[in-house]
Length: 269
Length: 269
Image (cartoon, one colour):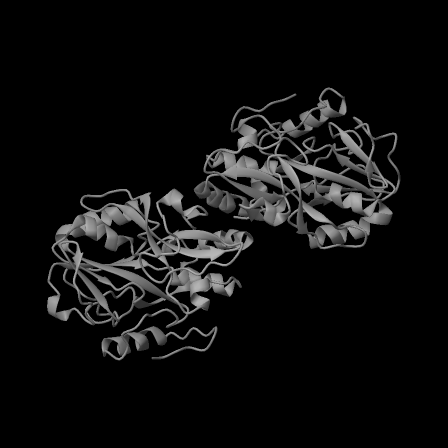
């Protein structure tokens, strides 16, 4: 795997990472790979469900900010990288049939690809976490080498066709003054979930046990810190549980699509 | 008193308000007067203390954002309004001698004006409150017709010469999602205190009884709301208590200088 030196953003790194993932030489989580470049959440749906999902994403831009939409049956996403083949370029996939995940998470999906599948790539918090860390804030799960804690919340999503349900949120703990700074920094990145959706009382958004995450790792919260919640790109997987399409293919949380887009270019100011 | 219609910003309104205040026809709080125009906190100090105070303000820009500084002995502030005479244009003054406030708050200060007095005008939260309200947020004390609750906090100020102490903060309660939006809106206005300095636990910044304000009116907090704290332009009055200059003259909290500057021009984006 190609790692860039701290602060260095080398244009060839994302394609190099993808090549190794495509070859099966890397199957792990992608946090920390290709620093400076956008990573994406992925959801692949049959064309029969693509229109509803497009409307769903448009109506719920905080959890589902669309970075790219593929053409039906076409596994390439040239706006994110000339060489991308979505059938091989994620480290690990999760396959849902009628809304239920298969027991096994495959390393590639060429054998189940269909001519009617449409790929959606959705912004990921890795982009704004890089900005938080550059600002000097402690992003706890990153500094501890853990995955971000994610939760099913009761924050309602605007339904579209068969897609709906509650928003999935990710949580990062901060001291109050750092939480205020984190609101400012992440507000600059609306294409990767933007500002938080909630802070403090977890029960107010239906999270009854903050110390037990529904996805990712359980949190580590220090004294005097408050939980700050952001909309999360795992939300489409929960919406797929509700919509029950005959097939849907996503990334395994944390195992993202590495793109050629630069995080810095997603900042609105 | 001249009131403008909702949404209307008429250039002649500030001078008209000042003329009535100057004539003694208005001696009350200035909240809601001259909508769209900047109001300022005022602190007037002897030249012997002006250098230290300038350094103090520069080192503490969140509580003490300087909008204008007068020339020694000159009561005019042409950059804020051609007609301004600081000896008559505040509705009510507070006079401190050796750091202790006089029992009476005079309506003008011509009789105690000196050739060595320097006027400092500091941004006021009225400007960002207007932006919060235009955004659709409920600014509680405004909607209830009360003065904002203000508190002495233990947030340390950077000392300069004889000036120092703890920051005075103002508090506005919001539901968490509205608090996040309030951070965004007020971040656009660094010249009028900008983003909050704290939220949630009042004891973390030395406020032991949130329901009892040190200045202004006591708060009204609804269920599910969290307290959000901003740096406050009353801070210089507390610093004057510490510095104990032979004389210092301030506005009575809420009785501000109405200027010709437009709130909208203070927004950085």
